[in-house]
Image (tube, protein in one colour):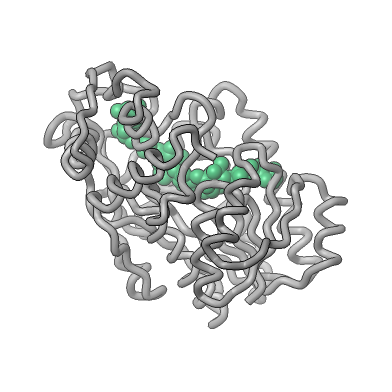
Length: 337
Ligand code: NAD
Ligand code: UFG
């Protein structure tokens, strides 16, 4: 299949490009590089042993430029990663998040419809469950009250895409609710490259390990969890990338609407991650306990069985692999790309 990949230069997009090429598909990438660099695409091309990808540096909100790109290519499906994702920033600048994520997706849907490409895989998030009604979280679990504007954009866009599919059954819409992606490609050539101070746990840990940050702040040790720190379902980014390949297969079989949790089904605490990272990489990560981070939920992990049953997808890497590969990326690229 020929795939339009929006946000393909980013963390998850770059890893997914490698997997979709490995599976025999081709891709055209559009990205405005607001949170990424072209270097990631250069390295993806190396890993895929292709000279380069068709790449358009454009903003998906810009209808005219997007329309020009559509004139040059015909697509079988779109994998839609493009969006802003910093939770804290979304609280400070909600309008920016609603404008970029929602407006961008609406323009994209219009263009896909116009060019008769009615197949889309959307990057959703576990945060649409809000404070989950049950753990492990199944897809039956009702969506909840989101704790920040970023998460609301995911929740609202899920609704938009469900309504589009409901109105026109020619659409195939796959909503992948990612849990916590970490890790990097085994080669150490591509990985997560945050701007400034990392918001998320693993990039913060790897920056402590490389000496860029003094110590990790652990946000709260008084949660109702085994060791008091927050529990999450960490998923290796390469496993997550492979879920998109499986979703493309489902789309080829005209799946209609599909909603899937993409996680391992196992919950690990912040201190589990720190200890595993230290053990597999033979490093020390100094840390200090701080107060809880506003908006954080104590614990969540998913039941990923629906994805296994319907998409034939299952996570293969464990927390040790994730910690090893995250460090391998950081060690080989101390300053990112
Ligand atoms: P990322 O920031 O690395 O990648 C997103 C890419 O989209 C970037 O390259 C950015 O430049 C591009 N982009 C943003 N707005 C754009 C626009 N208007 N037009 C064109 N390009 C634009 O983030 P990621 O971690 O790879 O996440 C990919 C998707 O998965 C995002 O939609 C994100 O919200 C979602 N997601 C991420 C996580 C996570 O923890 N990383 C969890 C759940 C869901
Ligand atoms: N944490 C720390 N110190 C840090 C960073 C994080 O203790 O410096 C803790 C958090 O309190 C939490 C856990 O580590 O308990 C994980 O935090 P992350 O920031 O890595 O991830 P979140 O679960 O908060 O959110 C992430 C993404 C969201 C996404 C969500 C579910 O940031 O965009 O996973 O997919 F929606």
